[in-house]
Image 1 (cartoon, one colour):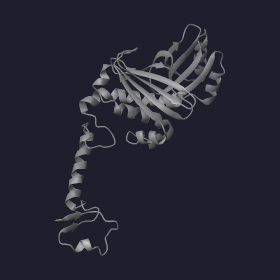
Image 2 (cartoon, rainbow, N blue to C red; image 1 turned 45 degrees about the horizontal axis):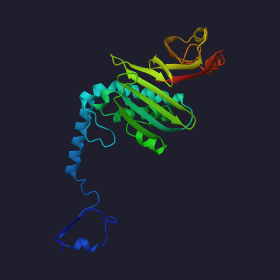
Image 3 (cartoon, helix red, strand yellow; image 1 turned 90 degrees about the horizontal axis):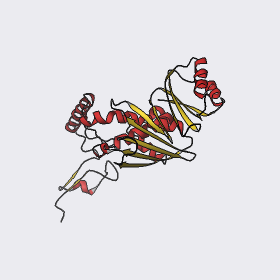
Image 4 (cartoon, rainbow, N blue to C red; image 1 turned 135 degrees about the horizontal axis):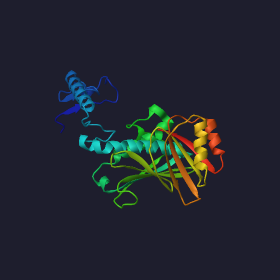
Length: 280
């Protein structure tokens, strides 16, 4: 025996000549029956409160498509969020081909106390931004990556490798595999400390010129001469090498963009194997 029924969805709306509507023990509403005047007022007030909290730097409640970060944890995560987003942008600009898989390794004890999901999202956003520009954000980045067939693998380890707390990101495309490791110094300043097999100490900001070269006398001088002749000022430089005389990497932070003709000149210079410009 059915004592009563409340219905809010019909196959066709509004329902026409339904016998259910004539029964005393049946209550029927349109599909949007909850959209009463009172409900709309309550929703508006709740939205206003959450916007106010967000503007005051408080945590955003009830977000289903982005992890909520408590305010005291945000202070710890914020420099890492910036670092991961820049590492993602570097990977996209360094790697040729379609990205198939991203492997993220969070290294150190700190990650046992922190939710790394926002960091992974920041990395994905950074990877997609050079391609999609303003159409990608922290909310839609994971969905876009999934739609593009990019596999994301995330692991945590307390095994100390080279740095007490660091993040290592390996990107595999249909053409190459590249690894970038980043960390924060004591003053929370971000550093790239490894690119593939090369250890270095690079500042991830602005215009970066990344060169692969042979570790031979005169290479650095030639780079400086070419940039100086073209009125491009070097803000900072860092180097890494496999062994004396072997393959090496040179990373320069520059005060201005590098024209294509200067890139071609650098590539044609003796002992320079490759040159790429990264914009962060």
